[in-house]
Image 1 (cartoon, helix red, strand yellow):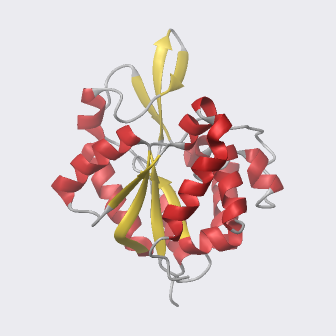
Image 2: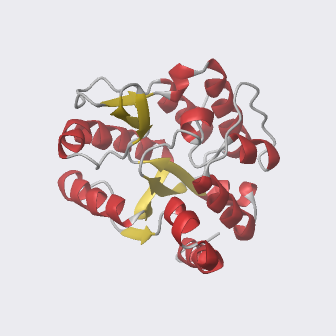
Amino acid sequence: MTSTFADRIIAFNRNLKYQGELPNDFKVINPFMENCETMEIMEKFYRKYYNDNRQRRFIIGINPGRYGAAVTGVPFTDTKRLETICGIEMKTASTHEVSSVFVYDMIAQYGGPEKFYSQFYINSIFPLAIVKEKSKEKWVNANYYDDKALFEMTESFIIETCKQQIAIGLDTSEVFVLGKKNADFIERINKKAHLVDRIIVLEHPRFIQQYKSKEKQLYIDKYILNLNQNNNE
């Protein structure tokens, strides 16, 4: 029996493990191991929107936020939007994540989740959450590029997991990278590993929500304009 896009994403997530080294004050959180409901929710989401064999275009974030994918297992999706927009309720957690607000406002204007997810696949270049110890027992969100040693230790994992995601069924002729600093590091990785042909950089949803909220519609328009370019759908 032929596997679907959903089958392959679910298998990828089920097998995600970071076993490399980390600097002393960083740790990796695997949402699929932290909460047993996360695996169930993730499977429901991908069965709903990806249960086919269509090729998708790749939108690449940084690494999951603590209140978004680190809880739901679905990139840029907090529990509020998971329930109210995607119709999937998570019983063991309740989260609000600012990036998720922008992404789902953009998706609504694009044509809704069914249309959007039939054409695009979103994940992070480092697909597990990273936190840093700010003070004793106080952990905060961290990015894979925040620390030189952290990036060097995680680079091979990033390359390997990116290759695995591409093999799920992604169009690599043109990918969309969220965040300018993220794009700088992905360009560097791509020169080494030759993963994709062309990178289009878009401002990160968190940056837009926090610093450019008055201009939010301009950024939504920019996203949709870029996502629609060279799109034959």
